[in-house]
Length: 324
Image (tube, rainbow, N blue to C red):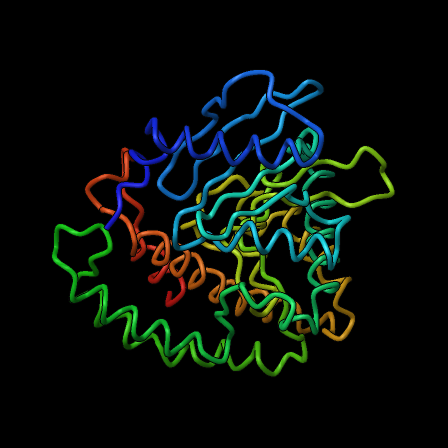
């Protein structure tokens, strides 16, 4: 297990990262005007600012469980370049990528959320049929989600009680009894006629840059939580973010969230209006399972005693939400 937080704050990391950044910049006819500066270091990723003669670039290092993110952004840059901030370079062996400054984030307003959700749907539609071009992207589709969840319940239950991922045996028993209901929801998604595609899994204004041209889409730059899956699961995060409720909260129903569902669903004319609510509710369960899966792949390679967080992530919360 790794202490990635300590690694990303160490002098050897900074020296190696600086050398790679300088190599990338030199190939572009650019150079640094100062040292790399820490923007954020969490156990899931580290971001350092790189000062340039005209602006700033950003070095991102990904947790080993989500180090595919740089390659995913690069692949999406070839598939749908107007929808993402395309890295200048990616170093897969280290899980590093260097990004240009994409501009200010999307406005946290009703208009910003509506634009963001619609643009996310457009990106998803662009990625349909491109599984072979997005092979680095982990999959958690509706067809396999029940088995994944059942195995995860058993794995979490077997963990020591001191582990943040531990699932109490009584809670696990209730989770097992809810699996048939979850399976029926996944069958509903499979029967929806909506094809699998990119599921960004963390769509919110802080993870995308606003376009300078109003006729162009928002550009995503943080896709470490993504999956190849049923696209509607993206609403799990977006609806709660727009309603300003915790991710573990029940699915919100407000005027804004209903408008968001309509704006999103308009991109999927194969889904009849009368079927939207049932599909959203089923996809929300899948989205909760994918939040759990994101935490699992982030926590597996790291030292749980060295996360540098006030409260450890609760994988069990999202498992319970998926099975509620």
